[in-house]
Image 1: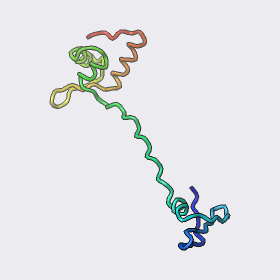
Image 2 (image 1 turned 45 degrees about the vertical axis):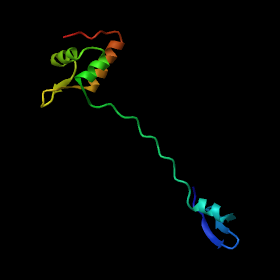
Image 3 (image 1 turned 135 degrees about the vertical axis):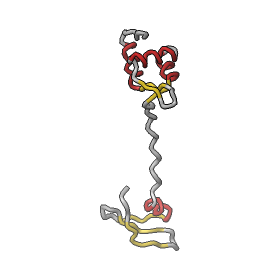
Length: 114
């Protein structure tokens, strides 16, 4: 909103004279003057949707694929799914590889078990 310039204020009458950016003068109430000088803040923007994690646990990947955790583990070992073991020995599966495999099964290809 363009800013106005206050030309004159009459507290006694509760009015103010303001000049708009286009040069016109306007007589406004002090309440309107307050709104002109302090516009309401813009509403907050909604947060973007959360992005999927880069890696999934074997259980999460199994639920997404509709198979058992053991099958996911075999697919990681065979290279069908991209993943690795953590230092603690737990498997993690790349989310992208799970999404690719889901896309293949939706196009009519059945995932082979290892």
